[in-house]
Image (cartoon, rainbow, N blue to C red; front, top):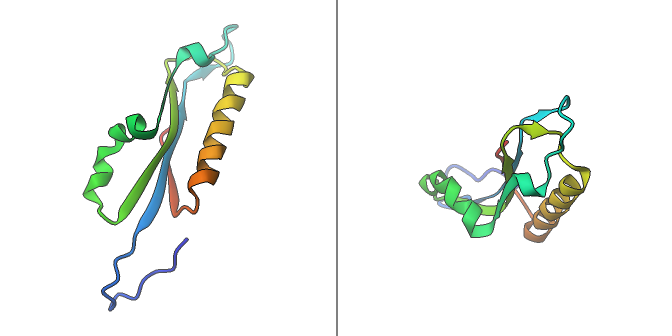
Length: 105
């Protein structure tokens, strides 16, 4: 994280924030698994459109990474979770360094 600026300085501090999320109400009692077919996965500019409120903060640069959302279902299929996690970690590494991550859960 960047050090705090001197309040007497005219330097404007900029924050680099990543946006990501995974959302699914999972019932472990369900015999069905929630897989890729059940999720709406968005990334990049398409994902960024959902976070227009960040425009109110000119000192924040937002990098939309990946978000997956599903309606309530069973536990998440391990193969889908592993794929999602790999894409998220790749995005985090590719756009580092970060000042924060906004997780939309």
